[in-house]
Each structure stands twice: as structure tokens, then as C-alpha cells.
Image (cartoon, rainbow, N blue to C red; front, side, top):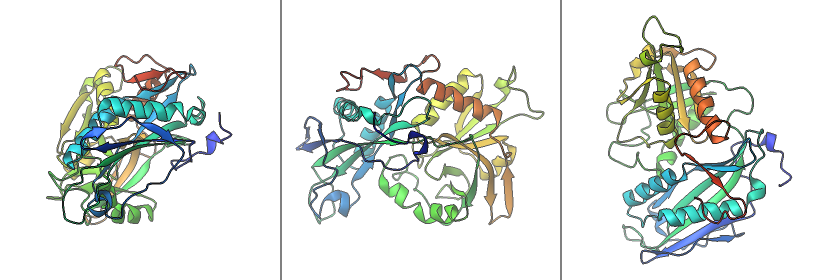
Length: 357
């Protein structure tokens, strides 16, 4: 295992030994191979540079309480990358190629899988780019698929805590029926102006729908979750069926694998799970709120500030009981502390990890 201060890792890039690459020409993907070369050799007119023909993913490997390494729902990431590729007129990466690339990246960087107990994980950033040189507007026909591994620290290095969000109305993250449901770099670049302004104020950014600026869209780069309890609020013991797990439905929101997992766990807990458009004002009816995604799993919100309307929606200074229970339930599965009833995790044979399976 590498000499790394695992307890001091943040969500930033740490140089691995190898990355994994595979090229596609004329619709045919080559076998993934490992290399120490971390630099791209691109034509200046490549379609990824000229027209943003690029998509990516994010997933993790966890060293469990039993010492075994688990990959979490990597096939769902492979499917989502295929959808992003189709949306940008790129040749999709076959699941077999995706799995081999992840497995090879893990095999070649086993020393970078953090030990259990640190909360750190090995993060994979699969990247798909168009490499065909062209100046005329149009898609490329040649592509490169790259898997970039990097150990990352826990999103909460200390106590599970809350974040404040600011309502944004001056930057639209993604348009309806545009690329919002695809994991492409342009969606994130378009949000930087708003998110960096919020970060400068010690907050994060809550985006509204681009059409009416009326409905909740996403929490910065993550899905939104709201917990709605009837009045008077029931306890978690016996009153779960009266508690509602709310998350937005929109053609401009990325379908989160983490959110999908949490919805399954919420249903098992007995909560009513609802996906629909959520008006901003409905925050007043919620007892808990959070962002959710691969990096954080759940990032609880203490308050949402709407400066334009001079209104603040508060959810408490500490993470609520429902979100806390969901957070630990999913983390327990990922780290092998509890039974995985859903087949979400795949234990990797560390001696033959050439292909994720």
C-alpha cells in the first residue's frame, strides 16, 4: 500500500501509477490497456475541444470491513455513459470494455485503495472524448475512452454536517430537453459562474428550472432530496409510511445512481417515495433537505436562502433523522458492514481484477 496520509485526503486528484485507455475507430473499440502516460496527444481541432463532444462518469471502489474491495453499481455507470454518448452522437463504450477498463485500472493501482476505517475510497473518472479533427460543425467519428483513478477522502472528514444553499435565478444550469440528463462537462462549466459566487459566500447553489425559475432543479452538481412529514410529525418507529421522500422529476436533471439507491432504501424503510416537479415554496413544508451524489452520498442542507424573495427555509443545524439513517444505510452496504440485498456491490478478486464482474 502506498505511503499516503489517507486521513488527510480531500476530494482532489492524487497521481496514480496507471490510467487506462482504449480508442475507437470506425465504430470498433480496441482492448483497454494500462499506461503511465497521463497526457493526451490530441489534434487541436479534435471535436472534444471544438464542439464539446465529451462525457464522463464517476464511481468508487471501497475497501470493506472484511478487507475485500467492492465496486458499487458500476454497470449503472456504464449504462449512463452510453446514454450520454448517444446524446452527443458518440460511439457508446460497450459494457464489456467499460468493465475491463475499470478492472484493469483497479488491478494496476491496488496500492491506492485506501484502508478500511479511513472513510477514503478509490475514485474512478471514466472519460469519453471525440478525437476526430474537424472545423466544420458536426460530430467526430473517432473516440478515446480513459479511466482515471484517484484515491479521495471522505466528503465529511469529521462530523456529518450541513451546508447552506443560495437560490440562483440568474444562471441556468441546463435547459429542458437539452443535455441536463447527460453527464457532460458543459453542464458543469455553465454552472461555474453561479456556484463560485455562492462558494465565495460560504454557501452552495440551488438551481431552479430554466423555463420558469419556479421548480427545484439541482443542488449545484447533485440531485435534490426533500423529506416531508405530516403535522404532527410521526417518529421513525411506526410512522415511516407517513413520511415522504421527495425528489424532482425533470428532463434537465441527471439521473443519479446514488439517488436511485437511496430511493430503494427509503421504500424499504417504509417511506413514501415521490418523484415530481417541486415548487421552491414547498421547502417550507419539508423537515429535512439534502443534495445527493457519488462524492457525498448525502449532503444535508441546514437552510436555503432566497435573497431575491427575502426568504429563508430552515431545516435545523444538524442532519435530520431520516437522512442520517439513509446515509448510514447506504454507506454500510458500500463498506460491507451489512448485507447487500440488491446486488449493488461486486467484490473484486484482487489477484484477477482484470475485469470488473
